[in-house]
Length: 293
Image 1 (cartoon, rainbow, N blue to C red):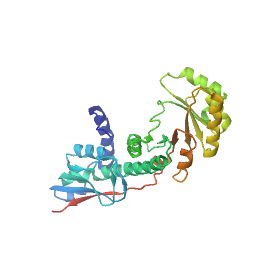
Image 2: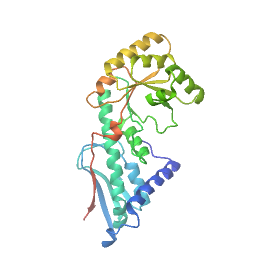
Image 3: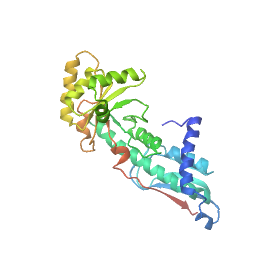
Image 4: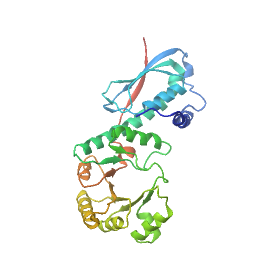
């Protein structure tokens, strides 16, 4: 992952400032008990997995006038006990940013590690399928969770929609509210949407998937359908469409580490799940220790 631009850094710092304000409030009264001496500290990885949040940790150190002596890189695979970062600075400064920094790194590392688990299982099938996140993210923390998904997939993941204005995603609620047939709803969406935006339709039956494909939707999302039913439906759509371009196919709903391989072999292009951001299976623990020479 490349370093952020100057403008991106400014925007990230604004987010991080909000987190620091929440934690510090009117000052760290505990640290005031101690002398504000110059100290060194190390951040230790207490699990096995992928590390993530290094970029954010470095920005927090920059904001807190703490020097980073050395650090691993985002996406590195680490073993328990590995030194993630070594820091130098005033004791009060280090302790003031400690909890915010560790919370961000642990959350991002957990998501990145879980994404890597999913993407590894997909790659083992030999299929060209990506694991994608959803909009089920922690309010105010989406930018960090989505970045963790991108890093964790190591080229085999996708952040999916960042926000509601990214693309049209028509779900069962939209279909019910519109009281329109699938073909008519897709036609209406195309008329009201910029050519630069894709249109996706969530389906729960083979019939709806076929109707969406025939209406030239950009993406068909199979929601809570079995791998077998998805595979037969995709084959049917390809048979009907013939030489015409078929939509992108996405599977979503009840995706787990146990069934991800079967979904990867169902013929879809994308598999999206909230598991990687909302319920990461990997729980990474990271700590900070003051080094006493």
